[in-house]
Figure 1 (cartoon, rainbow, N blue to C red):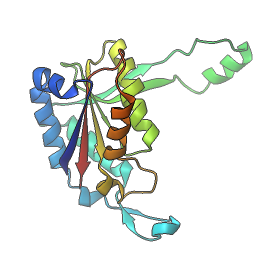
Figure 2: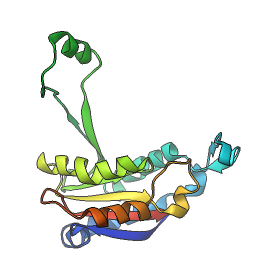
Figure 3: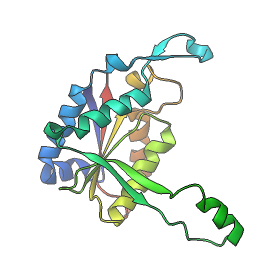
Figure 4: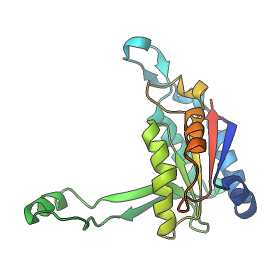
Length: 195
């Protein structure tokens, strides 16, 4: 795969250049190492493209996980934070029933322990892209885990070869540009990738 577009959100480009040039080279290496053609494995059952072979977001995510974990690519790993949902008022029975389902958590796709750079790879719906940059990265920054983020998303050309509903770089960058930044936003570099 290759990086074909970038969007600088809240100074993300200069933050990466100044603080994380080695890590950015690792990110580029990971992206270029993934042969997207190996992951065109999903046979569509959608009416508008019945039987067409599409890129599998789940398989692409696994490929990113494998590449980022390699020591020669920096040894990035998932970072999970357990959540204790104690806010608001609930009945005691409701809380007990919720606690039987396991400990809730939030996680960042990739963080390298020696840095404060977080990476999210998103081949999903539009709301997840916005959540990653405008909520999750802010939360992980407030927790002291990251200070800068990278969001890796498909460009429209690539997303068109996936199931309908997968969002893409152009739409995401347009919305971020028109949303503007807030005093709680962290620097994020958005990378648009293509197969």
